[in-house]
Image: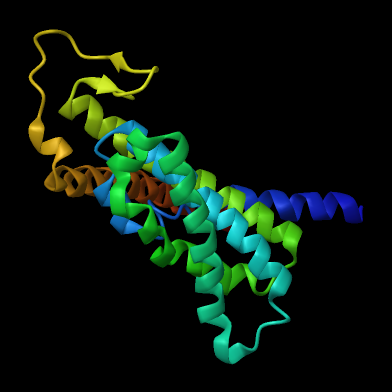
Amino acid sequence: MVEVSNVLTLWKDFIKGLWKENPVFVMLLGMCPTLAVTNTATNGLAMGLATSFVLLGSGIVNSLVKKLIPDEVRIPSFIVIIATFVTIVDYSAKAYVPAIAESLKLFIPLIVVNCLILGRSESFASKQPVHRTIADALGMGVGFTWALTFLGIIREVIGFGTVFRGTGLAMQVMGEGFQPWLIMVLPAGAFLTLGTVLGVMNYFKSRAVNVKVDMQDSTGESCHTV
């Protein structure tokens, strides 16, 4: 029974980052890379994976050493640990995927100050055991990655008519007569896309809440009548 409870706890730690507490669409964290690098699906996916690696690695280390770090230097210590993993990602990207590293440029080093990573280290990793920290980091990482990739797909399809351009998975999804919307791959397109997606999501969330309230009211009236 205890093992089942532990598994359920880990599952809840993981699944919350995918939707209920999604870093991008719910908590609005990491807006700098979200707006800056999602002009293509490839960039969004690459930034999401890089951030996930740093989130997982730094979370594990911070959880392991949390009792060894004095409170006075806790946050600076967390930042140093995060910066170490960012350096690993930066050098690895330049060595193995130089084209993507060149495309992302300074946004990889800026992962150091991503409020999502420091926030999870401070609010979760520093208070929870390693196994829960891993589940939380994986969930938040996957949630961040799919959100950036989703925004990148929308902007790339409308802005270029392709998906995953510049890679072996590149696909032309629009016909020859399609006129690309250049604004979608410019900074303004990032705000338009994110704002539209958030608006649609909030609309359906409010609809779901209203339906739930109506059902509860109907149930209450039925019970009162009986």
